[in-house]
Length: 207
Image (tube, one colour):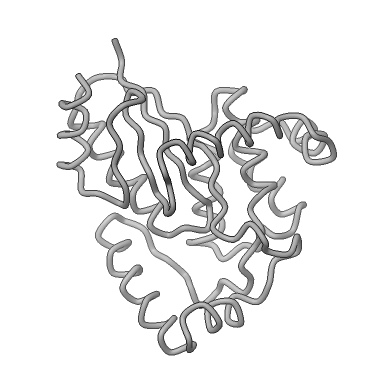
């Protein structure tokens, strides 16, 4: 029976991107199929729909822009070790991610969820694209293979919102207060961008 892993994450969480890389290494070492499902978490649920200046947001959150730059440097170093080149200097806005999560839900229905999540991470973190703009967001997911017209229609309606609320309920059940958060086979959980060895141990525990 293949393992399943639910990943609760946000597309503007750099550690979620790093965790994705580390999980990928663990799955490659495991040598057996793993079904991965990406579930939503909003780091900033009260974020305005159009997002806000990243500099303003990070300065308020961490007390100073200098402190934000120090943290960015730490993340960049961790990312480089995983083959990710973060371009924090090109990221002008911190977006509201509800639309992105909505499209990730649609991608699951088309069996291209992982590709869409990867595209969103890359667009925001390594290309500096402003995914607070709906058209940019649609372009990113369409480039990853999601049907453009279906993506457009989805964002103009309410389809899939119940599923997003159910995913949020799962997060509450596991007392998720930060991401990334990984749930293996519905019973073993890990928090944070763990090293591949930790994922392999969790898969063993779940067997």
